Length: 222
Ligand code: CA
Image (cartoon, rainbow, N blue to C red):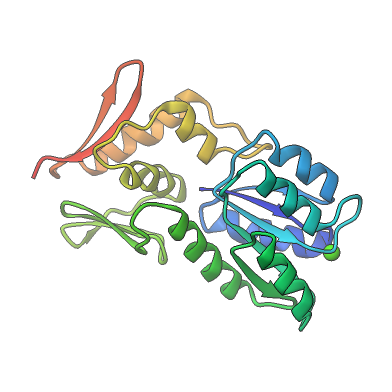
């Protein structure tokens, strides 16, 4: 899942970025409103964390422009403590949730998970396909209740496939969700993650099929 952080407080921005990366998200960062607006005009994210007080273009304006392009990307705004007017204005402009500064990281992460879930089919914290389960809160996958011991990247790949179980996910879509600007994942790397996942699911009834020229499809043969 791909998250875009827009925050001009560099210490806070770096802390957010690192903690979300550790939780397995692909994270990009902009430190002013004009850059954020330019990036949002051509890139798609699963969630935007948007500070309101930004140089060069306010967070309100970034949000307004995003929604004027008919984007449904969930937006979590960061507001100054107790600023009710900002909160109301942000929500009116199409933000999905807000968090007042200062906040604790655990709460931000919980809201991030909830918003991403809401933006996806089903909306459940636990994805299930046959006997395969992925707990998006605790970042763990099990088959028949036994842990699969997946790396953060393997989990991220599996989550994308499980969200679209029974449907083809094309390679470009997968790469887009897994990459950020600093780090490109090659086709080959994706193949490696898929190979490892298939190996770990070897004795299960879960199949990750390659649909030649189209992409990949996860299905249960149960
Ligand atoms: Ca700010």
